[in-house]
Image 1 (cartoon, rainbow, N blue to C red):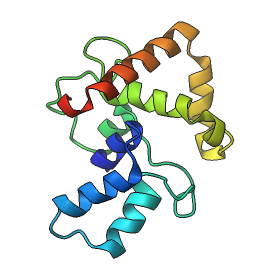
Image 2 (image 1 turned 90 degrees about the vertical axis):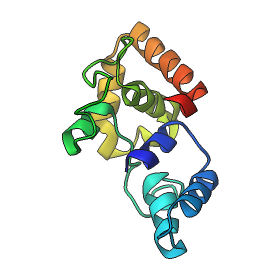
Image 3 (image 1 turned 45 degrees about the vertical axis):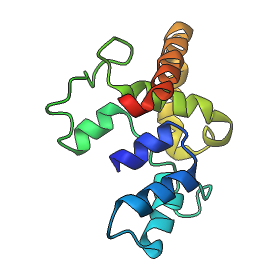
Image 4 (image 1 turned 135 degrees about the vertical axis):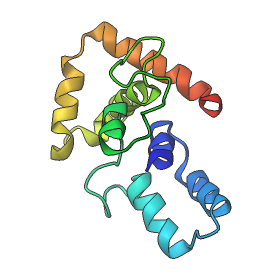
Length: 139
């Protein structure tokens, strides 16, 4: 979930994601990886398998796992120097994909939140996400 989410938010090509998972995991089989990567993780099937992209911010990751317990980033911070990278990446993903996703009823609350952010906050989040994507291999 975390790796797929990161790759989705960073706009890594689904074929590259699939290849990476197939090469990295000994128990990777086509019958598992094709639907998991293309349908669920990367939403590359346009919603045939899942009704919305499985994209998540730091808050969701913290709520659903224990990965944040020893993390050096602050999951509650969106813009600061110690802000969780998943936060800026998540909001940037939504902004980048608004033309095809904003009509999805399951994302209505997220887009309502995004529209409520001040324009300066939106620009700062998008800029931080661009910088994070640029150096994604070192995060």
